[in-house]
Length: 213
Image (cartoon, rainbow, N blue to C red; front, side, top):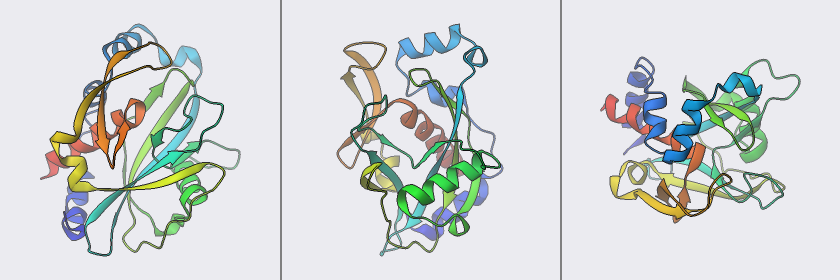
C-alpha cells in the first residue's frame, strides 16, 4: 500500500470506534482470556507504559510499520518483538508523551516529526504488571532509524501489505510465563513470531484498517 493511500485511511481511522477487547481476544490464548475475565486489573495497581505503532513510507513510498527486537536481558520481555515505547517516567506529562519520548530514545524518531493518528485500547500484561496504552502515528518524512544499542537488538521494518495478509496470521505452540506448550495465535512478520500483547495491539490496528477501507 502506498503511503498516500495509508494517509487517507488514517483520516478515517481517527473517527472509528475502537474494537477493544474483542480484537485483543482474537490474538490471546484461551488461558489468558479466562484469566483476564476473572480478575480486576485495578486490583493489581499496574505500572503504566506507552508505546507507538509507527507507520512511514520507504524509498518506494510503500507503507511500513516499525517494530523492534529487544535485547536479551533478565526480564519478562527479553528478546521479544514489540513496538518502541516503555514505562512512564517522572516528567512525562501523559502517556502520549511517554510513547513519543521512548520512541525517540529507542529508534531516534523526533517527537515533533510524528503525526499522531489516535490512541488505542489499553492492554494489560499480567507477567510484568504493566497496563500499556498504544498509539498510532505517522512518520511522513522519515530519517534513518538510530537504535538504542543497550535496549534494541534489531529494527524490524514490516511492509503493511504483509501485516494485512491473512496468511501471516498463524498459531504456534509456545511456552509463556504462565503456561507451557500452549497454542498461541500470532503473526509471522519478517520471519519473527509476534505474539502476546503486541499481537493483541496489532489485532486492533488491523481491524481499524480493514474498517477504514
